[in-house]
Image 1 (cartoon, rainbow, N blue to C red):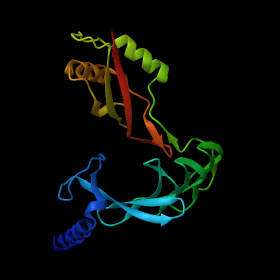
Image 2: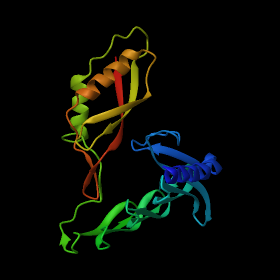
Image 3: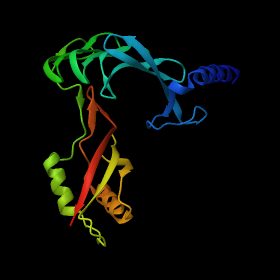
Image 4: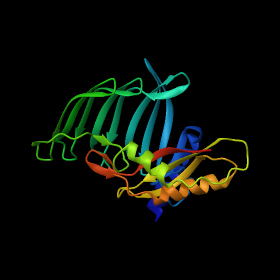
Length: 244
């Protein structure tokens, strides 16, 4: 108990000093206070005066072990990925590095298994995959697969559009306005189910929001996203337009 208290006080002091650039999250990716029992990692954003790069974000577990190091450059007031990004396993061993330029993968993406053997090597140019190879934990080359697959609606975006058109029940409109839009951001879990949502934009008439959520949770399971061959939770933003 005494050891835990000392560790907690150490990191509390560290985060207090860096408070303006430090954000604490839980395992759902939600911002929380350091004192929150669900807190599991924190991110520190610093300036990074290097040619073509102006800031760096480092992610740490609460025990101080680094998880990722990501660099950015500002383009027209918006931060975009730039330079070489680095990631580590929970054990602290190197996971992978990826090169970015102007917000897109550009150069090498090299990953290692936790036992140190080469896991994959991809070459990108302006976000487009040019070549790639994948190996198993024993060093044997296996059939290639993308390092990342987004979550997808069964049958693709066309089927998603068809689903929305066929299932939306448009609420009564008592105004002269002809269109209403709800933008909902939702998480697709590792089984493809809608796990949670956030309303990003909604009309004053909450019947539109209510209908958007009804058809959202009525959806069939999605094909879950994957990262390095493992299923992951993915956030997806969907605009739903009601017209008259």
